[in-house]
Length: 365
Ligand SMILES: [Zn+2]
Ligand SMILES: [Zn+2]
Image (cartoon, rainbow, N blue to C red):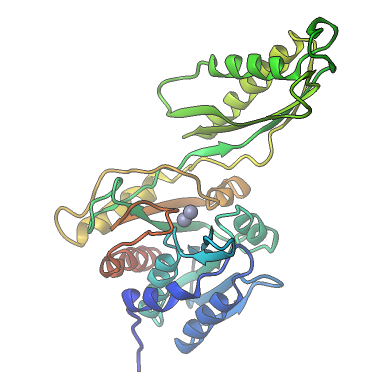
């Protein structure tokens, strides 16, 4: 007997299971149980809580991976304790993918379908870990999806490409020389260097063709108010919608910070940290997703939208020959993603699930 999962029901079961980062073990158990109940060959990815389901066709063909994230977000309660809440809709993504899996059993004729449930999207550790475990080495096509906030998509509509930002959060430590507060000329003030660097960074110019932003977000110096500070730490938020632009932006950032610090006799220690890639989707796949959305009925296909970052884009950076796509599902999510009061109409999830099914059948059916 064929079991067909309902994405809406599954989402309601998954919602209270919310777990954080890599520690999504109950969620992994739930997903595994649902995949095994469908008779799908599924396992935990070695020493992780990631889950991989595999459906093989009997004829040669591509390896397609459909990917869902699994993790929730931490919020502080008034009593100081931390609670995990599915405030980014990853419960919805797992539900859509499991419902799709139940409709694909017995339908894969060519190639291989991989169903990846990935932990730790929010901490950006998940995709790099899956890559380390070899999960995407043989993948030719990878498709992901995310529910969208009401500001992006009207409930019941979908877009074929979620236009995420590439991002980095560089830390800079300015180092100068301390002095008595009344004798600033005898020292090198790290706060002066930081202020000059912030002004220099805010004066960076980049192409207006691609959306990009750069902003200081944290600043902190050490010591009492009557000593010229020798250390000042500044954090920046850097984003752009294309990888070449974010790389160029970071080069200009380093130059602006280094020379601004030098002009005050200080040194700037720059730690760029992880650079989260921007999307580099395959235009053909995006067109196919558009037509799958149109097949669902008139008025459902909406223009591409987006914001924020996604660790899914690490897969393409790791394996450039892989074709990727990532669609958005409008469910009226409000007040917005990453809000502890996030709520949305999960009765639209089966529509999102259908796109996974249609794309898998186009390539592997
Ligand atoms: Zn998120
Ligand atoms: Zn998310």
